[in-house]
Image (cartoon, rainbow, N blue to C red):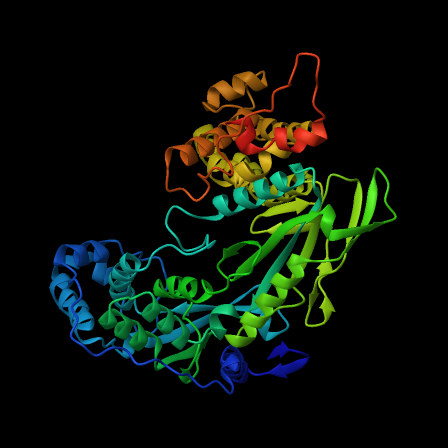
Length: 528
């Protein structure tokens, strides 16, 4: 018996109800697929060598559909399977038809929390046919060649990822606060409910037509999205297959690029960052936009006369309504950045309800505070590293040698401590750096207990100290941006950055007017 929403259910009933819950967004949805041009077109064929390499790259550790045969069979017999698989893929590309069997998905629910009590506490993990994934990889390669880059989208794109999104956001906020006409900066972190499950498949098809994608390739994608089925696999129970009308199948390779095309139409008139189903709106609050009540040198309450972020949030709401998406008001939050000790601004409204204003906000993996000190981020990374630290202690007690402990430390602890460093490390305080150093010293003491000093332990490990290492990561990041003219951050907005010189040797410009301490510590200013 399983307790869900206060009701006890048998395993069979639970699995059936969970399957219907995942399909709940499909109620009262009518699809309107556009007509795809029928004139003769050709698609570049996939060569046999490419198929062979795809078969050899199969990850046999990933679970597959229960109706599927073991993936290691295909991997170990790639040379034998290569030719028929090559014919199947090219037949798909030539006819625009996708095999029905490969469109059947088996969902394995994974608990999001320790003790789940509702359906939403369980994350659906799709189990697909491994040969279907091979065909999809080939199709996805052709699709990526036809579609250009997307505006402000940092997910599911080669060479663009979390780090770039975080660095852009941090430095845009810093540069906003540097402007003397700016009182504060504000960000709205918007969250969509069941974003991939609610996306209508006919909308990315329309987008592909607008982008002049090969009609035959569009037909393949349309067939891939149409007439899909899913069931639930829970314990030893497999439910009946139910039709899937809308949504992009998560776990597929084609799904992310289709989502990027779909959300590319969302263009609010403020600076924004889109990362998968998360959209962040942000911008400066200028003196001309506000009335200040209860102001002093340390705090202020800002009453916005004209709020661009409110207009942008309304724009997102309107776009969501038009495209069948649902905004999650409870998870949509806002944060105000300022150099003042305390500051408060007018609430942003969503569905006639004020968006919750927080003193800290988590963007992807980084915790931001109102003054960009990133003290909460240090607590965050040390907390995430804690389980690995305890594991390191247990491995030491189990007799693992220093080489094994060092490898574990670098892969499981250093990687956590340094993730996203170009965004937050330049701004942390001396005290925060000391906390990171103490943590590193403690880890190395466990790995090399016989060494007399911290310097000896560093020399034995072959590592640089963590502060120097993080600083070098930031330098390498900036160098990489500079050397790539096509990098999204290689713009005149960030480069070149040069200090303001005094007009005379006797004149010293005001730090607030020209350069704030926050700006001086910023990534691009330090390493320019």
